[in-house]
Length: 54
Image (cartoon, rainbow, N blue to C red; front, side, top):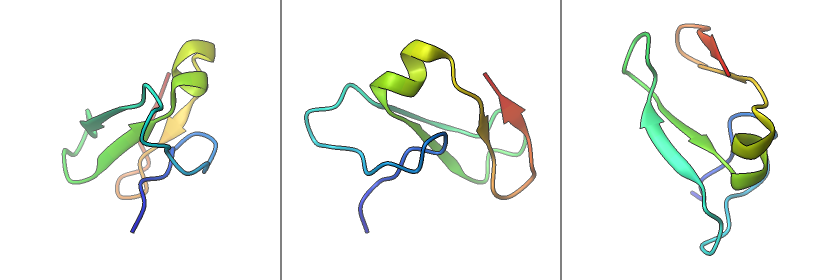
C-alpha cells in the first residue's frame, strides 16, 4: 500500500520531501504529510484518536 498524505489524501511520491511521524496524541498511527501540506501548514487529523494538528 502506498503512503498517503493525511492532510490532502494525495499519494506520496518517492521524490516528495514528505515526513512521517507517530500521532502526537496516541502514537498508534503514522501521520504522513506531503511537502506541499507541510509548507502550507494544512491541518491533519489522526484516524485513530481524532487529534488535529497543524
